[in-house]
Length: 192
Image (cartoon, rainbow, N blue to C red; front, top):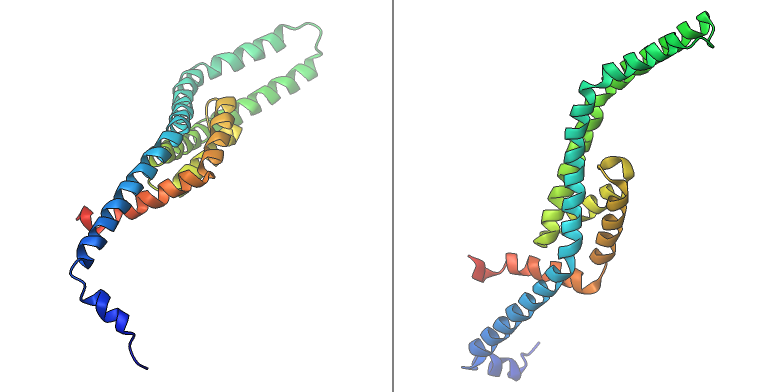
């Protein structure tokens, strides 16, 4: 098969390197504009996810404070049952036994539940930071889904709002283009 003579023209073209360099400069400028536009769109949902994660971490502090008063609350409930003259003696014993069982289960599950909330809040926080920097879509997607689930953070309403907003923003074409441009910029030869 013979070569096309036009290929030789392009190989021997003295201006070829300059044209290709100008194209690369234009590409990097376009990528930078796309990245900035995408960062502008994801900034508010990312800050919202940070707030959701902060509520989760604050709920840990609240849970630790509440744990110290847990026994006193259950003892007060038992005292109310014992002081109630309208409850028969055998029914009082059953209710007191039930309250003590609930106390035991609550105390056993207290720290694992709050530990899970801390881990999930940390994942939401990592996802929010990755969203702010356009560092990939896995962590922001995971963070938004976790924030939609009510029991994974300290304030379910705010989590639902910012989680859905983040999912909507992540689905926009210009935000997807921003993530792609950020990926290209991260692996460009000029970076090293």
